[in-house]
Image (cartoon, rainbow, N blue to C red):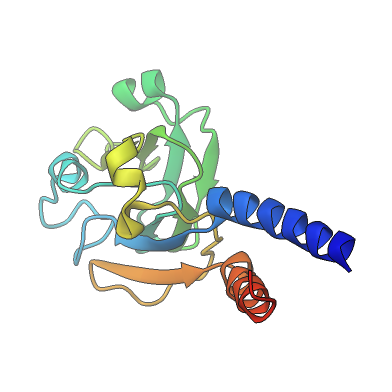
Length: 182
């Protein structure tokens, strides 16, 4: 009987140690590029100003909405971005409702590949900063790696709360351990 309790305690400690590293309540945000006007050359949207006013995190979703007759989205390297060179994109998006999940820290460079559009300002640098220790403990600042290929219809941005299966499992383990008097 005592050996069973010891094994249970060891298992419980392993689960708790693992879950404390993995358990996160997070908020992923969907950002519509350019806010209401979207991805366009109309309306003099300042995409650099738009981007610099946001705090992008891993797990957030960047949504490009545009008329496919006049625009596209190309992910490019930094030199291509600076030169407005759309000849060798890393990725090309053409649906008019392109949802891109941020998967890493750093810069994501996008431009419109239609001739003249990038030169007129239709390009954006999405900068994803590393989380600091202080912000990593905040639930709202914790990243979510859940895919968001079909985002909710955002106005300008929307928060999507999530909690993993691991969190629900921890509640069950804690309830069981309380029942054993541990």
